[in-house]
Image 1: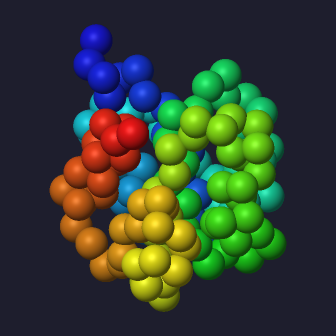
Image 2: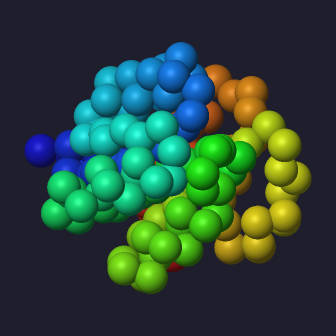
Length: 121
């Protein structure tokens, strides 16, 4: 079994087409992917996930912003890896220890970022 097949990703994106593309790319690599349209929905989805390895979340969403969702999930699971995705946030705006993938990007950049975050400290 590959490392990807043992990795669970929660993907939170409010644009359905974008979320679909991200999810397809991650699943194609073998990741187990759970999807949510916003932070509030993500908190419901995560109740059904025994363990979460990586949160990939848009920064700007209705109801709950990505950083707020990440703080809430990390309060429950401090070792949770987080990748923020945004076209509006500059590197460093989220803190020096946060992974940021700036839109637009290609499929391989998403896959590489997930691998880097999982391999990191």
